[in-house]
Image 1 (spheres, rainbow, N blue to C red):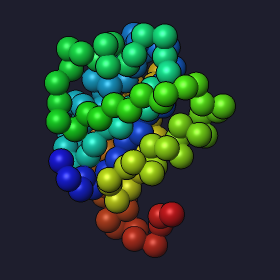
Image 2 (image 1 turned 45 degrees about the vertical axis):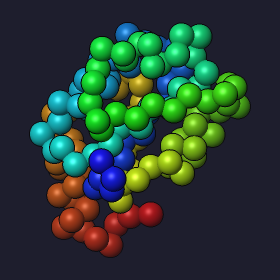
Image 3 (image 1 turned 90 degrees about the vertical axis):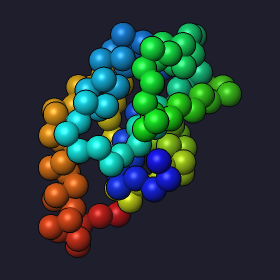
Image 4 (image 1 turned 180 degrees about the horizontal axis):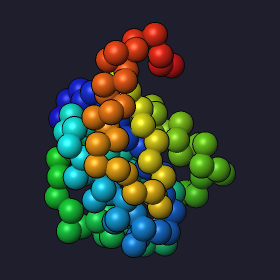
Length: 116
């Protein structure tokens, strides 16, 4: 996916079970034009291994080469890598409501004055 409408960014450190649940909730969205960018903060077990059973072209994983000083550093890196017009933050322990991305997209389409 070259230029998705939305980029969902998820920083994570050592939460494989919670992350799997979070990722599945994002990938099951009714709105499909997005990428999910996972930023692995040098977890003890690489996120790639935890998510190896999930195959979806919208999923991108980036592993930091050392532990970041804070979550803001991870979010900044993810924003730099994001290809979508709109950035949505999804923490690794969050579960996304099935229509959240559809509602988000509709809101920004109807309210173009909002944004960063």
